[in-house]
Image (tube, rainbow, N blue to C red; front, side):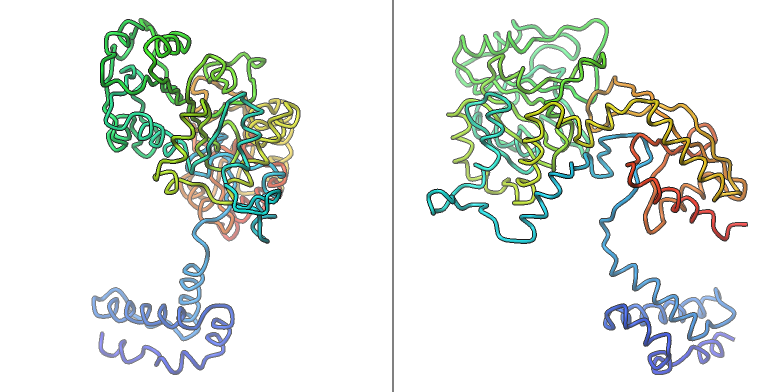
Length: 464
């Protein structure tokens, strides 16, 4: 029986001469298609020998299977998705979306030459770091600024430059870990600095820092606990106290603020994230933060502060390994220019999503639910109240009232629907709560609403 089936497998030459194959290789590199065909035929033979098949597919069926696999191989792995999770700065989905002005700036330098490291005024070699330096100084009042590839790089570079071989004093309650197992103690060890933790997890005083100061102290560090809060019987040391201590002993002070907040959300009744210009005014020698969180820019690590400290970092050989590319600098500078005007900053997608009124989100949810009820007769679609979150380790206590569309499929399970949406050509990433699949509309862009409806409708096709 297996031998009979093996003999029935179409010959390779017959497959290559078929009309379906000719059509396939007109849309896919032939070398890739042939590799996939070879793998597919080997798999068929193995299935037959091990008794998993009792018939042989036709040439058309083989070509179709090969075409699906080949298409998947040449399709980019990094693709656009619709974020219907309600998490605004979603680390797994690319964090902050860029403002249109930032996108246009990136396109301009991507499609032509640029003065990345060329001084147009002098007609000589320039520095890539000058492009964002000026606007960062205007925004923050800092003496100098430096951009690297991300804030983890900024932390590493600061520690390596200012405290290699020396002790860095930090509160035990601020030895943070963020996504991807990035831990302050591990980064400090790799930087060559020596960790000197003081206080306890929940209570640290300025006296703890002062007692730890010695001949080998290189830096006093503060790290913002952006993705968690310690409550109850607590005490921490203020920025002002740390700065005063550093000045008294002539030791530089450094604050890793994390999220990079420039827009003031105090009117919403929320707090807890350090506002970058305000923190610098308190006297820190160096402050670092992320570009792709609350700033709403491309991924970047931004260091601002005292000129001598920043000049030392620029001379560190590690700076070249951590340097940003022209796309990052173009998008970052465009975003920073928007931040000069609070009204313009409110148009940055991350800020806009946080600020959008619930009534406006509800109206959009009602419009989407109405369309889905017409296009998806095999599912219930209702508007419900939900809570969105900022994400990205920012404002962990902030709950944003929002509106979602709850889908209740009648012809498949919730897990099957969630998987179908995730595997569409334009994936829709949603969440399951209380026996319903929830599409939180706050994180769905207005221009993506039509695509969302079409994607959900596509998931229900041929499912009766």
